[in-house]
Length: 116
Image 1 (spheres, rainbow, N blue to C red):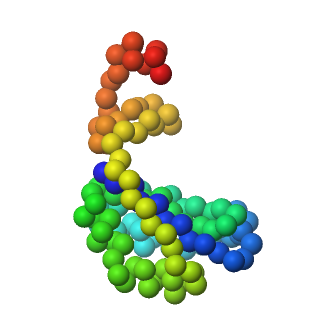
Image 2 (image 1 turned 90 degrees about the horizontal axis):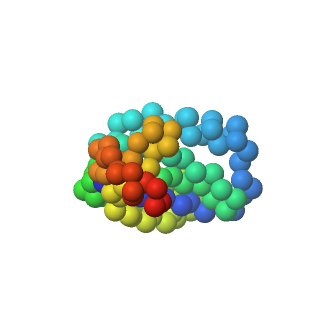
């Protein structure tokens, strides 16, 4: 799996939670249709916004973050984003009560759980 982090700088003040949620909900349906996208988390920071994307593969991420995507983002937000990729293997999911490797739950032995 692959994590992509997009940061989009902004020159305007940080939107409040209500405005950020409204904007994210407005574009969220688009991401339901992205091939190979497992999850997208929307970001709202003091210096900009963006997203954290979890893709099934680098190929799926490359298909989404293509030349057209760069122009689309610059047109929507008036700024050039930064894009960073990270290989993703292990997830600690406290809400779901699981540790996963490549999306599959694993059971750690008691000694390794105590050491952490």
